[in-house]
Length: 89
Image 1: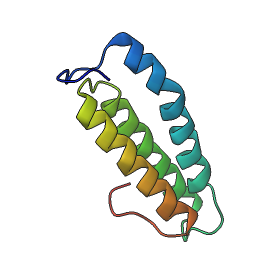
Image 2 (image 1 turned 60 degrees about the vertical axis):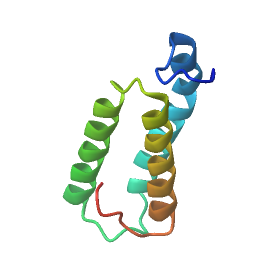
Image 3 (image 1 turned 180 degrees about the horizontal axis):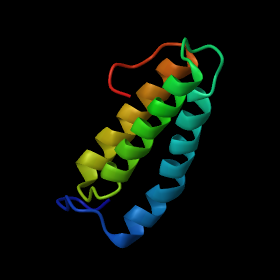
Image 4 (image 1 turned 180 degrees about the vertical axis):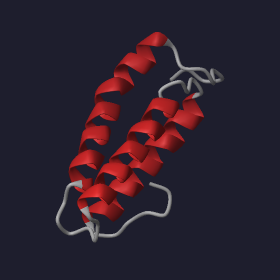
């Protein structure tokens, strides 16, 4: 990331893509966990919400917002792995 540049270049977006896909798959896997107190229908709803969030976030081009979204995703994943449901997913 160059100093003073707030918009992501194509190279930066390409570099972030594997991390984003890995986070997305990890969140979907965590939602399938038996540790969460969810019925099958509720799991499908939560997966749909996660997909919608990632689809909306895929249009983001600000470096700072991308970093914040990744941090929020990792925090959500840590809560799901502990068997807790975050408020907004």
